[in-house]
Every structure is written in structure tokens, then in C-alpha cells.
Length: 513
Length: 88
Image (cartoon, rainbow over all chains, first blue to last red; front, top):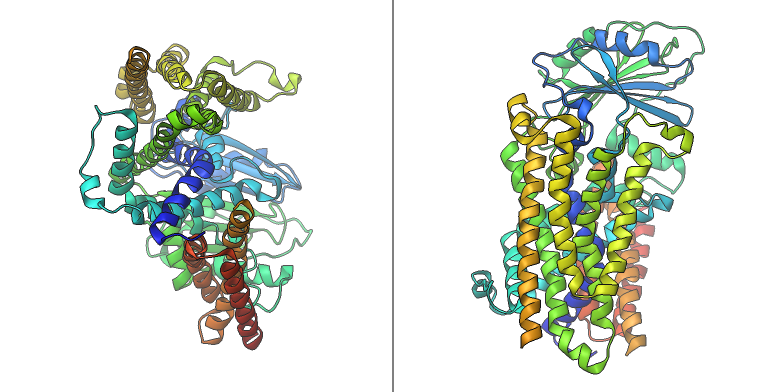
């Protein structure tokens, strides 16, 4: 190909965009929602809409409450403490290969019944980085490839523009769709360019050990499991000791937390994990909270369970702290509402960027492909519809199913856990939107926008009927997560209805032209 | 045209990744030898790897011919393997 640099970048931009746009939109959409994963959890798990704890709960009381539920022979149990966004305690244990999780109300120290849903933190968030394709980490590799494509798209998008400043200040919403789509593409791409670049790069950096699995091999003298675990221990920290197979006791965890507070200069643990419970060699792991830091520190302390003596301490090395800073920048696990909303907007601007990229590609080729009898526009349009409006619709179906499926039905007897049915609804609706997109072509945009406009308020209404938490009640009761989610759903409905009406007008014009 | 494009995509995406991965592990060993803590050396190299791969991808699609792309990748890989051999 004899071509200039900028021509090859334009070629690369349109092909990488068309091929990877679909996966990228799914990643951006799910990532944007993950910014509020805990709030989605509250909405989808009504019995966890608890008031935020006013004072810390004694760790020994927690241990006392959960210990009767830890089966003999469990290899570990763990409790993640409540936070302002996660008012319930999360308890889990591992028995052999199986793990079991349950939530506790910290006020009454009683277990909350299983809410039968993967919700935001169990479905939406893992979808964002793994696409729920676990086989050989296929999903994570696809996400990695898409992330590299995103970086390539950002660079090639910027360098292929000649008048970038002028285009930044140009938006002509009333012009032809192709023109407005391009203006909006340039605007969302440039205004949030630093966000898009950093969020993509930091997302890749989180998974260095997945994407460069052999990175340590030359420095650690080989590719064996031993070299790998040595590297992991030096980078991420690890402490292990075998079972003694003799009975043991559990000393006060609160006393251990006091030692931790001294060691961490006031730092608090965010989870407690007890290894080999009941064994003489049992030990307790405390991890330091990063609720007030960007850097997701790796500070960890290990105590002998019987005596409470400090066995091992770990802190990340300087470069590892940079990696943890990049990770924290991506995860936003720290408490900061303004930034959280800005991340949400940044994520949405990424969604707009990808969707308008598709629209521009389609509108630019529609007439020519129709004249030449090419299938390109037809194929890509169905793909784009399913990927953009389709995944939004599927997400709304997921929310709606969550409020429609009864909690107490004997799902286990049908062989389908309730959470699986919810996810099944998501995938079923998502697949249907692609088929609809290919069958109805450009009309499907409008159809699906109308469906979004109908389904989003339905989800809000169902939440009201099934939990009594209508927006006003949610506000008075202090369920801000629920209130926020309801308001966003209503806003989505308004936006979708507006888009559907304008699409209808555009189609009308085409017919009369 | 199709063959040339296929060669280019394979070279840039697959070959580019292979060279990047080799560069990451080599750089990890070199940095460790220069006195950096081993785990820090590896993590530094791995984080920079994404930027290296990005540059290789962009260059792979801009370079004049797929032949030139593949020759450069092969040359870099040979050089990296030699360096890796020297430092481990």
C-alpha cells in the first residue's frame, strides 16, 4: 500500500472502529454503569437498602455472628466491612473448590436472605472486563484487544484531523445526520480525550499479569510455577502456612485491628480473612482500606489466630504503588461523589463517541452501497444497532426482570437459579436486538429507542410497586442510590424518546425528498 | 491486496504483540540487572509494554509494505533475544 501517513491512519481508524466498535461499546457501557455498581446493587437487592452505619462494628461481634455458619473443613472465611456505598457486611467462605457468600445487616448481625441476583457488582462489573467469557480468559483477552484498539483509534482519530481546533468548536445538530454525527464524534472524542486515553491505559495496566503473563520469566529465571509465584509474592504480597491438623482457637480480632491501626498510622482494615479456621496454625489477614486514597494500597498484615502475634507485614514497592495508583484511577473505589459523576459522564461520552462513529460510517456509505448493491451498510447497521441501543435495551430488560421475578419461587427445583434467569433475559433480549437490527435495518434505531423509552419508566414503576421506594420516598428514606438510579432511568427514557422522535422526522424527510 | 492486508494485520497485531511481549520480559531482566528490585523491574517493563505495543501497532499500519513490517519485527525479535540471552 503506497500511502501517506495520514491516509493510512484514516484507513486504520475506520476499519478498527467498525470491527472493534461493537465490543468497545459493550465495554464502555458496562464500565459506565460499573461506576455506580454499588448503587445498582441497592436497587436490585431491595433488602440491602440499609441505613449507613453510624459507628464501626466490633470485629469480634462479626466473627461471633458468622462463625456458626462456617462449616468444618472450610479453608478460609472472610468478611468485607460495610462502607457508605455498601451498607451490608459481605461474608463468604471457601470449602474445597466451592465458595459461598451471604450478606449481613451490621445493625442486627443477622443474615440477609439471598437476593437471587448478580446485580451490578456480580454481572455488570465483571461484564465490563471479562465479557463473562471465562474459557481460557477469552473475554479478558478480547477486552485487552479492544482496549489496544481504543488507544489506536484515539491516536489515529486525532492525527487524521487537519483542523482539530476548529472541529472541536463545531456542532451542527440540525444539519444532516452524517454531519451532526461527525461533529458530535469529534466533540465527545476531543473534549474527553485525556479521560478516554487514561481510562483505557489504566484498564490495561490493571491486568499486566494477564496480558503479559511471561513478563517475569527473564528476570525470575524461568517460566515455571515457582518463578511465577515468587514474582506474585514480591509484587502483590502473599503469606501462607500449612495446616497443623490440631485444634486451635481464635483470639480477639479487634486487638489485631488495634495493632494494624498502629502499623498503618491510623489506617483501618476493609476486610478480615481467617485462614484454616479452627486449626492450631490458623492465621488472620487484615487488608488496609483505601477509601480515602486513589492508590489501592496493598498493605496487608497477618496475625497468628491463636495468640494474635504479628506474623508478616507487606507493603507495595514504589513501582508497584504506581501500578496501584493507575488501578485506583480506573476503579474509583475512593469516596468522592463529584469525581464519581464525572467518571460517569466521561464513560457516557465514550459511548457517544463510539455510537456516533458508527453513525458517521453508515451515513457516509449508505447511498453508495445501495447503488453498488454492497451488503456492508446492511451488515454493519445491524451490528451497530444491537451493540448500541440493543445493549441498553438488554440492560433495561435485566433490571425489569429483576423486579418481576419473585424472590421466593422454588428456582432451585427448576435447576435455574433466579440470578441465572435474570442474566438469561439479558442475553435473550440482546440477541433479539441484533436480529431486529438486521431485519428492520435503519428503522430498528427508532423502534429500539421507543422500546428504551418504554422500558426505563417501567423499571422505575416496578421498583415502586415491589419495594414502595418511589423517588420521593427513596429521597426521604436516604436511599440515594435508588433515587439516583430511578432518576437516571427516567432521564434515559426522555433522551430515548427525543431521539426516537427525531429519527422519525428524519425518516419522514427521506420519504418525501 | 487482500493478501497484503492480511499480512499487515497479522504482522501488526500478532507480530507486534510477540515483539512487545519479548521486549517486556527482556526489559524486566535488564532493569533488574541494573539494580532495580526484581518485581519493580518486571512491573515497570509490563506497564510500558502497552505504550510500546501501541506504537508498534500504529507503525505497523503506516509502514510502506508488509515485507518491511515483517523484516523489522523479525530483526527486533532477534536483537531482543540476544539481549535477553546476555542478561539472564
